[in-house]
Length: 188
Length: 110
Image (cartoon, rainbow over the protein chains, first blue to last red):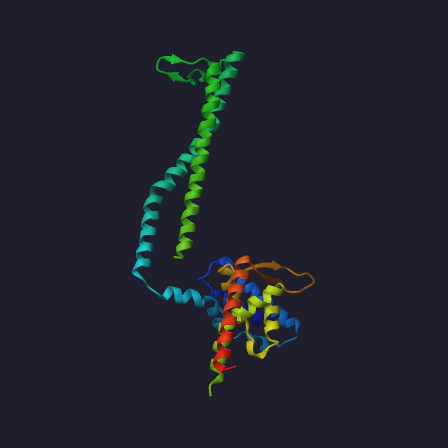
């Protein structure tokens, strides 16, 4: 494969910018395959270029459907695009930062809570008197739980917090995926 | 007499049918389809018509494709095959084609 063809394929790739990257790579790979097949049949560079035509024209053949679709301006489409960006813009303003803060915080809390419960239990059982451990515990009104129920409760709380954190994270990922999916469906 | 224009319109309308007929028999890679078509001067086509057409047929779910990176310095080849929808589509085309041929022979007064 000589430099002429490298340049030819580059031009095609550039002309295909309106298409998604994966599609572009695929198209260029297929054309490259054709060039290599023809080289294998001992066709000259001129013959190959003659058959393929100008790179811009070849690229345009791929874009044909797309361009004729895009040239049709409709108010309906315009409104859909506006609605999409307004909705995503406003909802994203709250959803993304909230979930992005909530998710890791809950996950960290979900890990820290049982760890502290264990520390409290170990401290109580072995009489270590670790400083500040007296501050660890659960308080319901005026009743303060003893270390064993604190330990059990901390495990339960930890699991719940962790699941909530993970759920928020999944929700965030789901939200982002849905947005990009909707965007590509609308082909904006 | 401008036969070329009429011929190219006719080919443009039937190329899709030709390709589906080919793929109904066996799987082909893109360049092989061009080779096969070039056996018949009337439907000989180039990359710029066939490749985008294959892409559209695939987008419409009539075809599926897989890349086979053939060994020994051969270029990678993208093989196409019919999907169940493609087979259905071809079936319907066969029907319409028959209708067209019947109409033609009627009009000719055969």
